[in-house]
Amino acid sequence: MKLSIEEKNILYAFGCSNHENTVHRLKWITILTVDTKLKRKIQCLVKKLEKESVGEYYTCFYQQLCIEMKKYLEAKKCIHIVENSTN
Image (cartoon, rainbow, N blue to C red; front, side, top):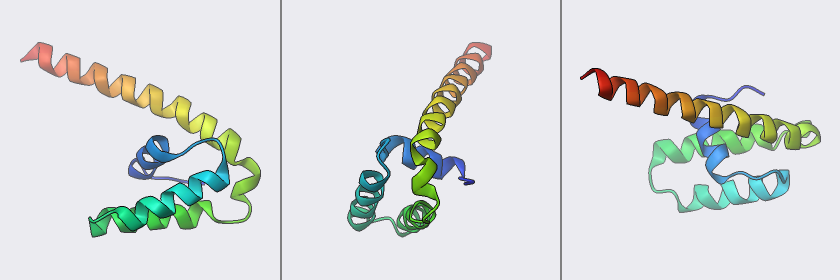
């Protein structure tokens, strides 16, 4: 499954290793979201996660996502430090 960085951020923030709970939580977040663009992105993510085949490998996928996002956030933090130190 291919996800944009925004979808990965949403899933990293609100997801868990349980597929059904994640889908249910994202549906509630969609209902509570006021911003229409963000609401549409979350709805697209829910549609991707609701495909039947996703449930089979979701736990492994979510663990890999967490590892990837931790590395991404560390790299982003390092870039921010370098940018601030060069000014």
